[in-house]
Length: 478
Image 1 (cartoon, helix red, strand yellow):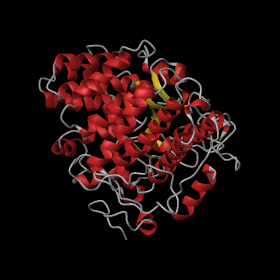
Image 2 (cartoon, rainbow, N blue to C red):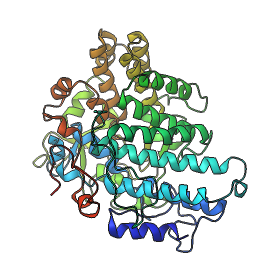
Image 3 (cartoon, one colour):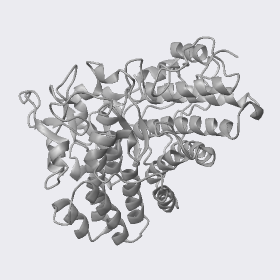
Image 4 (cartoon, helix red, strand yellow):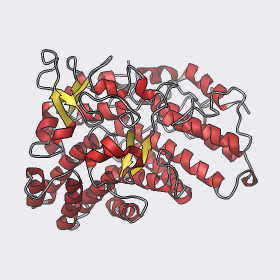
């Protein structure tokens, strides 16, 4: 059997940067070692570490999660470029084609390498349930990567669409690189099958920078709330209840404290990304792109400032005006991760994939969408608002209380999702797009067509994989 890295390196030359790297949170025995093959449990763990490293989009210096924060929040109108303007702020998405594509396929290819290698080993090579757990973690990573592609490069909102995901279920080689994209329905089914195995066999406990069955449940909630097929919303509620009832998870008493004090030590974090050891010293780290500005500067736009009107979170998420108003007017520093004037640390460089807050808000949305009690849904949203420091006298709290129809309450849930989860992993953008199209247009007037919900397939895919099929509607494959 060829080494994982040699096979993946071969795919780099014929596709879109599939690769094999290191572990999520440290520099272990790593998947770049040319002699590595999966021959036993220890080498299986090394390969799994490589899949996590790709999941974090990491390099030797730092994790590369910032585009998970920036692109969705920019599409939603909340963040922007501090040294000028970006077409993404106006939902002109052509330039964003490659943002998640290479990262996602590199990640799922690494996961496929783990799955293939571990499959070839006997159960006796592993202690207890570790073989099943490794499968579960690899399938979680593969499901996450496929769902990222589905959410940004496929018509996820049309179950009958032929424009689904290019599903990769085996390690990419010269023999299998040519493949047609699947339908949207097939894409959902494949992702959910991986998640069902991750839930059934995933570890019950793990450090929260590694996947567990609970992280798989949270991801399944994201998938189902987007699909919205018969029974999906009730399943979202059921999964949410299981996570909420798990005593290992608990909402942080203060949202500010989670980002400024607790970080991954918070019981609210279901899955996070631990920064590399020297990441905070990198002059181009994530933190420095928010304050004071490094190679780039990413800032809060007027829409985000307005969203926090009469909300105490404004005091720590919205900073002072930037000194670059001539290039990007009416913008301020975005201080959710790093306070103005502070120094980068491992805490400021930490990223969050799933938090319990999202579980509460997805449950509230699912209750409304399934025709359930508006009172129950409001109580969930109010719980999250209280953790943000709001009281019944604050305007955003009152707006939730006063929502008398499902349509109105869904808008308020979207707004609270944006306040609580802005610039984490795309929740604010997807929650917007799940609203009726007329509502989306009224909230974000630069969106005039559902073509703008997704971004084009990179043109290189059509060059190296001519069997791929059609480009996304509204975009050119040339």
